[in-house]
Length: 127
Image 1 (cartoon, rainbow, N blue to C red):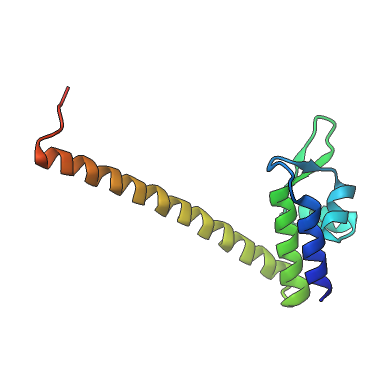
Image 2: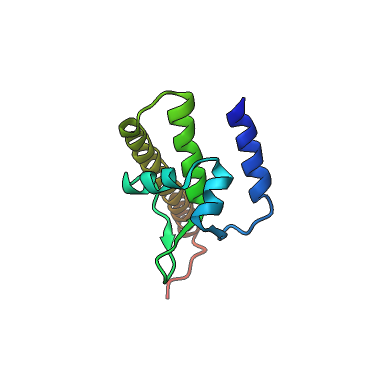
């Protein structure tokens, strides 16, 4: 139950923010319900990669915060250790990349079919 409340608190906290919003570590930690040191640990483990300001201050994006929430769900609710979380996160990222590639390829196939259809009907002029 606590994670459901934390989830809704997070969603209420970020509702209406621009997609490029960035948060310093203290605010980010409060939004996702972890200690600042936990965020630093996740960064050292390579699980999140916050941007850095010119002054080297960590800036967490909404994407970073969602990753931290996913890490917490995997560890707290599913009992996955951080090595397992790393594998799951890499696979999840890879799947997203492949899905994006599939969408691009499907778009290209539609474009080529439309071009082929025009060529077949003789409606394309070549320059």
